Amino acid sequence: MNKFMKFMNEKFAPAANKIVQTRWISAILSGFYKYMPIVLVGALLQIITNISGALGLESQVVDLLKTMYNLTFGLMGLFLSFTIAHSLAERLKIDAVTSGLIAVSSFLLLQKPTLAGEGFGVQLSFLFYRLGGQSIFMAILVAIFTAETMGLFIHKKWTFSSPSLPDFVRKWFEPIIPGIVVIISCWLLVNVANVDLYELISLLVVPLTKASDTYIVFILLEVLFMFLFVIGINPAITFGVMFPIWFANLAENAALVQQGLEPIHIATLQTGQAWVVIGGSGATLALNLWMLKSKSKTMRSLSRVALFPSLLNINEPLIFGLPIAFNPILSIPFILNGGLINPTIVYLAMSSGLVTKPFAMTPSWLPSPVIAFLTNQDWRGVVLVFVILAIDAAVWYPFFKAYEKNLIAKEAAEE
Image (tube, rainbow, N blue to C red; front, side, top):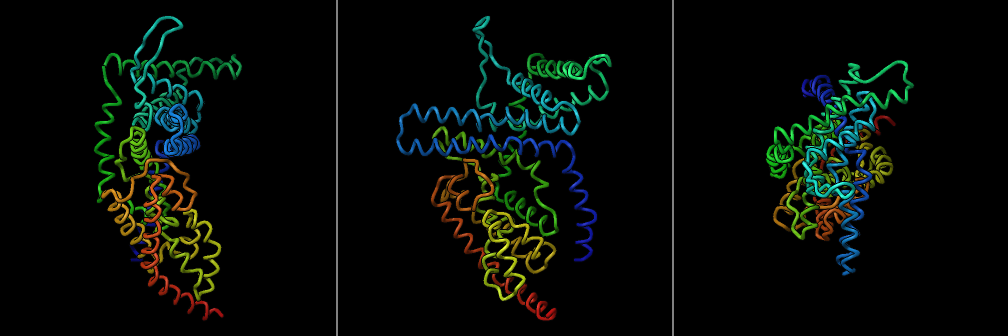
């Protein structure tokens, strides 16, 4: 066991961190974080829209709210092409705003819009769904291609530049050549090679999103996330890869609900936040509640400090303060609850239709019952949170008592 832990700490963890910290992965994750405020605005509008519809307000009001929602959350792909290119350009130390704007232009050009009218009356027509969450992977590719091309030309000095030009003027001219290269490349791909990049990526990504919704993959990922925390690695290092899948699934669910249909995807970020990791990774809220009445001074004092963060699904104080990480007693229920039991219950409840699948984005710093109701607006989801919490408490109890006994003995020896 010691040899395994040594390998994970000295070999695996540094290698995993090195991969995740590559500029592409970190830029993708950063791009999602930059887009998050707009997502939350869209989520609030979606909730208001659903409430307005349920209250029977005039159709004009509901339609206006739907339009506002579509122009925030509904433009996920378009906005991410900007934020991801912006983040990658920052890492390449080139003009981030210009890179983001050229990425947006390229993204729109690749949609192959149709033209109608003449002069000032000309109109561009896009298929709206291609600008939203279903085009996340296309946005990522466009953003990376744009920023990397811009960075290559600028760092190689293949640009219009002159030492005699003022700095602000040089910054205007610097992006011209690489910007034209990016735009023309996209135009050639669409209009000469006749490649529909959206459809091509969809063919490759659909199997991936479908696989994420299978029970085996759903469980394996949750076990991986719990295991990483046990060995002291925050599973957030995987989010640069997982966010595009989770957000694409949620966006498709939201689009289906907008059409009056049932959501189809279980694997979303909200699924984990609401039902799988109640109190944080490993479902530690139940443990925190047991600790409030612990006979161990260490557990009791730590539980009071960690309770409020636990209610908001933040449990680093417990993972690294109790600790749960590298703890052979507490790591067992941590992985059992967060990796096996909770995901299984959630998967069965949602795949059977007992609980509605998530379709609305929610803030991650809210208590699980609140996230559950906001993300699927189904009271049965709230009930499921408390059912899972009770099961978590039963699983945690014997391990909590065993570790409490060790701490009491340690505290007595120290006194």
